[in-house]
Image 1 (cartoon, rainbow, N blue to C red):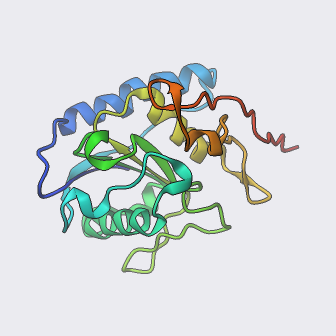
Image 2 (image 1 turned 45 degrees about the vertical axis):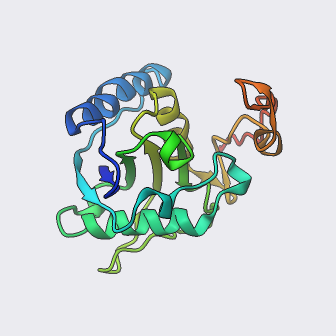
Length: 201
């Protein structure tokens, strides 16, 4: 389920149709190709859902280790609560939230809220007011996130977990990602860590 979400003080530059095309055409094509047609995306896009506060209330750091996790939890929980009345989340184990704001306003282009930014416990931390739990994963993206960003965080979700570790980890050093440097004008070169790979049998 793709949920388009807006802030009351920011005018979105993406439309519902563009969001559908980005996820269910472009991202789906990529996922099909890299999985040799073993995996594909099906679902719906709904919106807009307007958050209660301005973007500054939810904005986070661009550095993973400096992100305020309470803000991530607050944003995701508010969005799924607003969508609960017209979405049967039991039909959609994965939720992608697309924010109607650019990275410059929100702070981070995209991230996997669970399993990821909020840890990878045995159960999702997101529960609807009805008591229903989001079964699998939740990712959050700014409106100008390109398909590579969408794929990165969705693949964390699709890979699942083994032994409370993600099967598809981040392939970079989180400590270096949080330091200034020359790489892309801001970060140090942090694509240096292959992480830990699991091969379930």
